[in-house]
Structures are given as C-alpha cells and as structure tokens.
Image 1 (cartoon, one colour):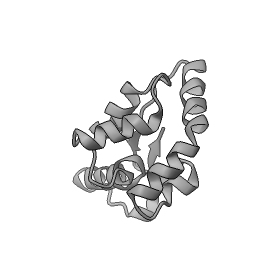
Image 2 (image 1 turned 60 degrees about the vertical axis):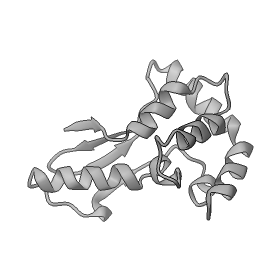
Image 3 (image 1 turned 90 degrees about the vertical axis):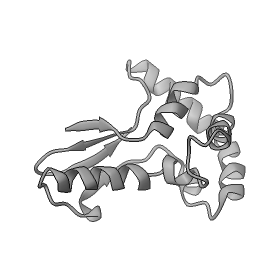
Image 4 (image 1 turned 90 degrees about the horizontal axis):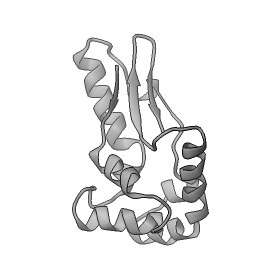
Length: 127
C-alpha cells in the first residue's frame, strides 16, 4: 500500500515553485490552518508516521514506530528547531535547500510529495 497521508504537505508541495520562498508557503499554510499550530508536526515525520502506523495495525501488519524508515527533506537544524520562531528563522537561511529539492524532483520527472509505503516487511516514508 502506498498513500499520501498529509494534506498539509500536499498543499505546501503543490504551492511551492521557487517563485515564492518555501517559508512563505509554510507560513501561509499555517495561517490558513492547513498545518498544525506547530508546522514541524506536518513538515517532519510525526504526522505521516502516526497515520501509516494506524493503517499498518488496521491491516494486521502490526508495526512499531521503530520499524519506520524515513529520510526527511528538511535540513537537520530546521527539523530540530525548538519552536516556531526558531524554525522559521532557520528555514529562511535554508531556502537554497528547498530550491535544490524542487529542481532535483523536476530533473528526474517527479512531483514533490511525501508518501507512506506499507508492505509486510517494512514501513517507509518517502519524499
């Protein structure tokens, strides 16, 4: 099973085209309440990880959070920000990272998306 489990990330990835900084898209999604009050819940692995674990248990593939493999798209110091103010300040410094992520996806013909994949042997979150 493979699914996009975050409408927030889907909104952000669909809106971001490098003409407006990534941080502005995240702020817009927060202000319009597409994200949690702390957008890191949506931008990181927490929200999607919870959803794929629920699905795994519903399909009788009982898994634990430690069974989920994940390579996030956020720079480490953005992902580890202590609060929204720090996250937004650090995110602004990493616009080059989001531009590169956007262009790399385009070069290989992919849309930017964050999806969860479940099979008998593993759970993974993929950008």
